Length: 409
Image 1 (spheres, helix red, strand yellow):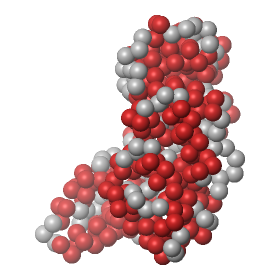
Image 2: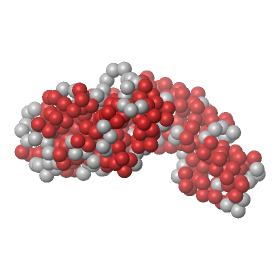
Image 3: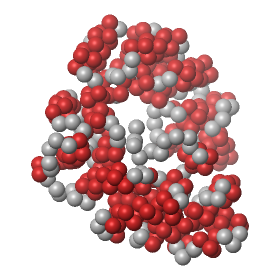
């Protein structure tokens, strides 16, 4: 989706980092700010200690980086960033946002990009501000593309008061920037604008079609400050009027009115492009789990995201809630959002607490409602089912252990 994403086979280190959130303390870089590349070559123990204590890596990951010759490069990357005016806070943010930057070779890859941007007139304050907010720019290899995306982002972040009416018409770059600035002025937040700016998707590249699509989305009542506004813009842009009519006809045959479809679209714009085959497979999966056609219709109208879920995940979650926990299918129909919750991290830990309470006879003979168990915050759940037993500290400790354990009892 994003042109800034490095394509091809991911290296071993990247596979690990994709599942690893770097937890950084901005002040952690202070003690390492004067560490040179030569210092890191004094021994494995120093490098591993530096990665663990300063950057928050696990010992295993730190050792892996060192053995793949990334340890020295990592410190040289940090030193290079500091030499270009990046503060501890900047570097912390960059690594949390774009950890694969540390896989780049400091001298042969990263340094030339920073020198190129500086040679184009970028000041230290501008360079650090832009690259801290959108560090993926540094993943671009060619100078021409690097320059183009840097300028795009600069227009949004730095030259925020520039009028889009003064931009030249005709070029794809000019149209894209003009359209993104239009969205900015409508109230679309920066965090939603930047992905549009660096995306290969053509939603912001046209002129007439963009204006026509934007008008439709606004008339439907989407709020510009929300992700759904941008998602609706994408979906409307990629579907022709003919395709939309075919979609409405298809859902009509399934028993949904045109009004139903557009209400579902407002709740989840991404469901509309689904193929007829995927929708029919989804219906078959839900019916096979015990939902009636009427229940399925109610489920989808209330929570159209259900159509996007894989049949395997829906089966696992439904079987756990209905067969293991004994909630009736109609409880899921009344609380369809539970099908979107993470089974291992949210559903199972809470249900294990309920099982533990029932086994102790502390909930009576009836199972609590599905909504009271799953459709609430962790704080509300713990207050409702754990902290109410505060007089029994041993029981509270046991319940917390069950809750944090995340295993099926």
